Length: 332
Image (cartoon, rainbow, N blue to C red; front, side, top):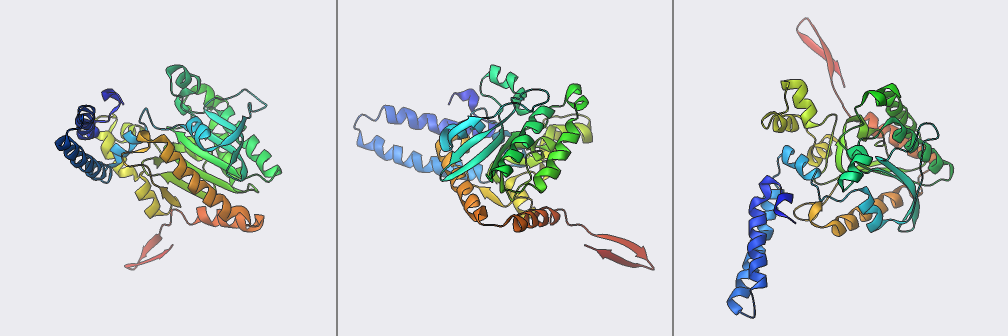
């Protein structure tokens, strides 16, 4: 990686990797250098564990947005076979931020749906940096219904800062279409597996995020709003001080969401983040996806829908009460 690709808190890691690379290139059969190389390798592993084992929420957001982090189409190349993309929503057009298609994952034929951010500037502009328009959610729902018709499981890979925030998108019913997707996914008569692979921002993520299994990669985030948006609302400015405060308050990391019962699993990433080893990340993701699909394979439709309903009903437990003669009564 180039120096500019490293995040601020990774500086020590980068410097040690640079030192290691120089020693390895100059080793030339010198025994003392070989011992030093082994020592630095051990120290490098320990340093990565120390830094990545104690990331702040804002640092986690930065990792989830890393320019070298694997994207949807990277996973298509690495773990899915026979991908055939399905285009268009039969109404407006073909949104490029949400990609859909038939694919094979191990022994399973699936319908794959996910956000694509783009790697080059041209690709990013084409798919609006992963921010889908209404036609993207309509396309996703069309293909989910197709999956249910042919009894194919649905795999959703989520990676978006949010739905496209333009006036045109709102005029074409962005909010309503996301709401329709929530309703229809809750009663879709086929297994649905959702994984947040990077950013999971707002309704843009939730629009393809209702499933029988919902998980996250270790250094992804999943939140009702981005830290910048939250900071802008609460403190009227997204500054270097307010963004970390907002990220902390939102409880958006995989660890927090696992404790709250919002997600089922935290899928581990390679030491130092998914951007350091695409293939290892993809293989781990594949293992979890196959496990979920095997678990759900023989579940009846009735049990599938009831389990999905109860899964989301259990979220957001709260208490209500009223003061009466100094006594509080409440329900959960």
